Image (spheres, rainbow, N blue to C red):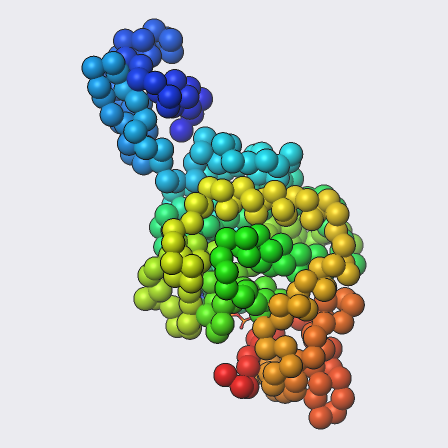
Length: 313
Ligand code: ATP
Ligand code: BTN
């Protein structure tokens, strides 16, 4: 969609406008107007042609830049917004390209959505939120674990305004309802010398998703939990607004407190298969690491690459 398409939408959103009038306002032929109307229909807009002209009967459900702008209240985050109907992975795109600080790359579906360690993120088309945020400033290298915990903690807080279920954070980067996962975060950074010069924060949330056929583990969505469809445009705008605010006011103690309050399996027996460590999950330490009470005393875990599993469920 380009500027001309957006102008057409603006013109025909409130009142019908004839093809002839559109062609004279835009300085393009009536055939060109018709082609653009067809293009907008392909993007999901329902456009009626009455005797008074074209008008938008229903806006597209897609998270198109034009639609997101209606909701977005941020100053810098997502003001550069790149939309794909389909892509391999928004994280891959955001890493490959030189994009400005605060860019948001979003796709309606991903053919190779990534989890951690080469795992897959299944991205049902038009149902969830699958996006990546590019950050190039204000990244605290010394407190990177806490910085990465900011994202699940903020997203959880926003989602609690949408659904009435208790949301848990599976340290360090998944959101769960009961024993079912519905959101994940993939944070990838480019380090040069002692500096992190770019961080890509990939966020996948099952919003109105219903199809979990290809998943090996229990999953859910906000729709399945709440029983009603959720406005993805507003949800995305609310999440970006809160992330922007929290990035400008990083408060490590607050992040730790929020994550600890919602920690999945807190007080329960857990284990880390890769290192054969087993114990009771006590909580977080001031650096965002996990405190595990083992029979050899307290062990602290910092590596998010380890797999945390429950021994009780
Ligand atoms: P961990 O290694 O911390 O235990 P994990 O097993 O959840 O985490 P991740 O790499 O964090 O693994 O996430 C990828 C996994 O998430 C996939 O292997 C799959 O089980 C699950 N998954 C993939 N897509 C979805 C989705 N849309 N909703 C819920 N779960 C998903
Ligand atoms: C996980 O659960 O391990 C992380 C899942 C992260 C999924 C998001 S969807 C948008 C972005 N693009 C990707 O390929 N992955 C992240």
